[in-house]
Image 1: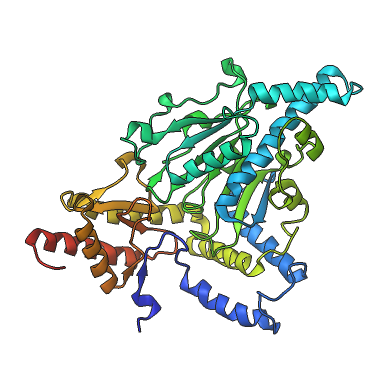
Image 2: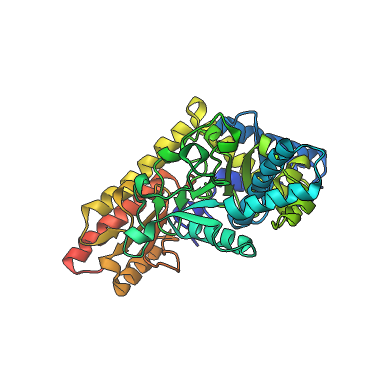
Length: 441
């Protein structure tokens, strides 16, 4: 039976966790801090649970230097639930801005039905949601938005870019920003969008934005014309520095770089949480109100404890975060970013040395540091099966590509140690060398 240290796991999620966190978690699952109770048993309303939430928020705030005007939420449903939550919450914010402006323009004493008709007309004429579709997950998010808004019509979701259109029908590139078709803002002669959504790192397709797109890195003194940027950072969360102040919303499922499944982190600007119209007003103008469990404002008012949260999972996330703070000290995420870059470079360098054996899927400029996707011998099924079988024999696990695209995928998340990356690099070299010689690895 292999020891944990013998296995090099590169699964895309659930992902590896630091062994020290798992060992401490095993104790906490049976008897947390000598209380005689498991963390899976304690009340989510208890003092202990509230302290765990506060400590985890504090660790995340330290890592990302989150400004005071942002709220941290713990939610259910993974990143996929946030596909819906983003639409419900930010469309509500968009409607409330129009409602307040209508009241200001027409007068507070104006009959409410007149206000409703004015906003309803604006919804029909002006509501747009912008999506940058650069991989499977941003595609799913855009499709969810289209489904939720379908009762209104089909024109409300604007796919500003679909990278498949310039890459032979497949994901693997990010077209130049000049080729994107974002909804024009007021300052550009348009009416603007409710938000712009993108996925920072696409796990299935191995595509990562090198940085916040320049055209989204903008501010506006006019609140009616500001650009609300939403980023799904599920699979590269805490792997590099991020200027949170440039975003309206950042979210991520925990099971990649943060912890275990069943916790989703949402970082949202506080002023947005107080900008919701009543559900009845939303319904009157033709927009669905958010299910309570996805309503960021309600979750925030209840300190993420509107319903029973998995306190053990939140504690695990906090332990992972505190581990990063301890490991990198004053460097913080700059230290983790450097390590992530180093590990990714080791793998890509080997792949690049053997182009006749390995073909990296994404374009060089957008290659993910987290999910390294490649084919063996041009996607030869027999060769890739052999590659995976011999990798498994050497306890290099979790390398099979996503079922929708096939191939090989090495996920280089934070908890993958450098020695495991070096072990994979050695195998890649050996397989390539023996492939040239026509012998088994």
